[in-house]
Amino acid sequence: MRFLKISVVGGLLMGGSALASVPQPWQMGFQPAASPMMEGVTHMHNLLLAVITVIALLVGALMSYVMVRFRASRNPVPSTTAHHTLLEVVWTMIPVLILVMIAIPSLKLLFSLDKAQNATMTVKAIGHQWYWSYEYPEKQITYDSYMIEDKDLKVGQVRLLSVDNPIIVPVDTTVRILVTSQDVLHSFAVPSLGIKKDAVPGRLNETWLRIGKVGDYYGQCSELCGIKHGFMPIHVKAVSKKGYEIWVQSRATPLKEAQPKEGKLSPAPASGQEKDKNK
Ligand SMILES: [Cu+2]
Image (cartoon, rainbow, N blue to C red):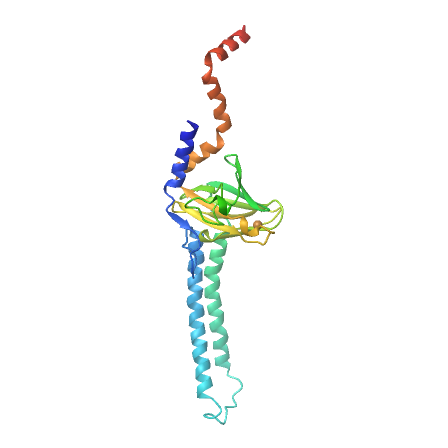
């Protein structure tokens, strides 16, 4: 029975793992965005890339023109103009407007990344030298999460990124993540989810996620925390809501379940003894 249950849980958890957010060889850009936060970050990055490209081209073109047109051989007698009020106002105001245009979406994004709005569940991530442990306070689930060593890797697992016990979260659910540390500074970072939050001993930092697709999302500790800093990866596994419920059951009930089962195995003597006691 227990084997069956484990295989059912395993099947549900493994079943739809179509999407895996891992770095690719020769990757140039971000990993595909898997959360609203990362969509915001990607959008902001694209906006800034466009702005900076236009500025660089414009300044480059102006500089080239000035260098060619006003070179000493072609323009032996330079202009003596030192001030031009209108020109100075314009070249101050245009950068100010550009900065304001960047600041508005930037602050909006910053505030949206800060705290979860209407989170339905909480996961606490605690950094240790050198592994993560996770707590689901509402479900009373706590466990440690260690990287899988190279020699123990199985098919489908990712070197330096797969762990024995990933964070399991349901899809389409806003999850509050509380980040802290037991010993030194760590940082909880998952690129495809747009998360990078410092884990500070004695402090509770908040971030959040909401994943739309079933899949595996990998990250790493991003604060130099000691000799095995590079070997404490983060693995977030998004499963269906039903899969999540089954996982919670499998995690939360082994103790409670064991007691009635023992009773069922030997019902007659147990009830007989009770009757005797009652007499
Ligand atoms: Cu660390």
